[in-house]
Image 1 (cartoon, helix red, strand yellow):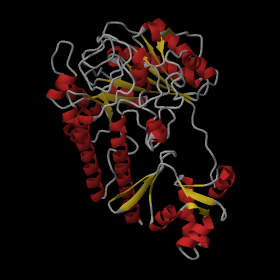
Image 2 (cartoon, one colour; image 1 turned 60 degrees about the horizontal axis):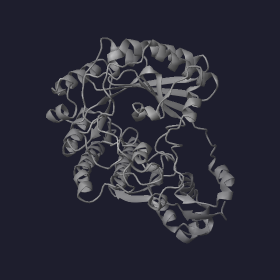
Image 3 (cartoon, helix red, strand yellow; image 1 turned 135 degrees about the vertical axis):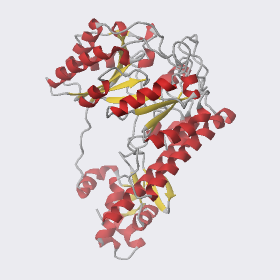
Image 4 (spheres, one colour; image 1 turned 45 degrees about the vertical axis):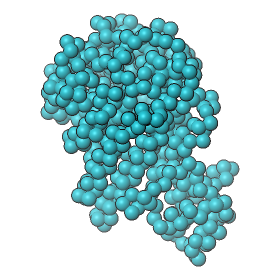
Length: 495
């Protein structure tokens, strides 16, 4: 190993937080490190010379010093310094690394109903009384079991969605019990989460969710009047008070929900206040941008609704920029300022950051700590089923007849997802030059592929939100590094 040449890794993101240098490698799982002075010196000096020569150039005797070699191993393990590809086996042996296969998982959206007690203007669902009847549920169950029996996956994760899925809670419970049993017969794990607007909490729901380990995500788009505008009832009234009662009911029942925030023109300015409230409440959350999945534009128009007429894709290149971009970035950066201040205050208090940031915070489809080749598994390990056993690669396409098939209950859900590709394979053939050279490529993968497809008719381009992603990703990495500073300090204090 001593003669092994080493180079600095590609596309590393570096910075300093609280006087501590950090480096992030988007090509590696959890590739974020705080650098010691030794590690920093080695990283700066890795220019293609052999490892031993590089170490000796930094410090005489370093090539045989266990402390320096530990730092070299750490940087190699996380790809911060790289080596010739053909030497990978030798490097793995030196590191004592044994590759571990990732669990083969299939994600499924189950739209149990199109009915909802709210009428959010940006929702892509055509509201109706349509729901999955027992026949459609049985088809879904058999298709899931067929995948489990065939060994197509080791885990099935289902999101119960709508409409408002809690309007069909009894049916949801029955399906869940049957699906758990069906998968267990073949040694496959079945997990699930409910996506709810938070205003409907049936009797016994918190206890059932907790007892069965089902996740819960609630949609909250603002405080008070802002929530009322963004998420009104079908009668045109506000929903904030209903949400407050629902959230309190879930928490009294021992369920801590994950919060989904959708930001559009009507609430983007309120993002910092909402984030402050979520942090004070101790609620983990994801921030997403309203996506015009009909036209694929970068416009944060949250009032067009599912009834907006479909039109031909726009010309390529509809990137949010200039004044409209700054209109989004100003409050968004203020929201991340609030998150960073919250994390910093908890570090100063010597307590664990709560809610955890790196493990639980998300922004749109970005994945900074798990490298991705595509932003979505639609058509490979991801699909959606809706009323009347409608089947599509993406839940947002369930209402477009030319992009929907009919679910076959006697055939593996995984096979059907891979065969039904109305948009073509959702993988980037090459992408444009900007994406190929962007340091954030493996964290972004171009964003939502359906958004690109609607805009350009293919997905080999830049997301309309590209410039937002470029601004947000470094902030996420910086705050995660700050969180690591707290971990390091607590560990030192415990010694």
